[in-house]
Length: 242
Image (cartoon, rainbow, N blue to C red):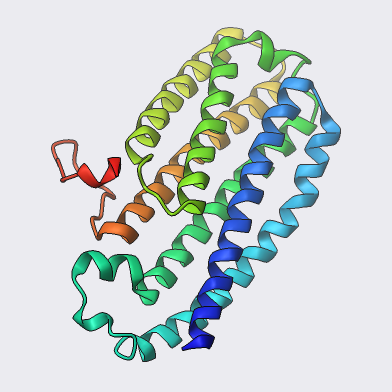
């Protein structure tokens, strides 16, 4: 049992490290845009290797942890527990969720890299993200939503889920406004428009992936699957405020 506990502790530690590293990437991307700092964009690209390494390591640990959990659930006495305790303590459920969360984190990292690559082309004029309100709001919402998802993961709480959904809705709106602003610019620089288009898509996708992480945390803690639900679906969400 000690080996099982150690493996899961190591997986949780690695998952938290990956999440915090992804958040650092997002924060540096925002600073790079706002400070016209291309050297910081280079750091982002180099640091992505660490995220990719953690993804592979977490995948391998999760697969081993799943095999251990299947063999050990009965020995741990989980079969006789109430559902609420089972959701929170079942190592098999945690290992499966870890695989999904790892994928979401890695894809946030990929979108940061995509945005940094577009920024490094230097087709976007200096001061662009400071002078344009829609783009500035878009950046701030991305930092907020990724930060909330990472904090929820590290602190093992899902109380931010409702707020994350609201921030994602705001981010989507700002991305739409940014697209409209881009069209209004009527720029003759096709490369500038292409780079901005890729950046907007990357930022919008980071929000979606943060929501995915929040949904997975809710499912891990409560068993409620909030994915792909209709707008009329009203689950009991009283636990979100605990």
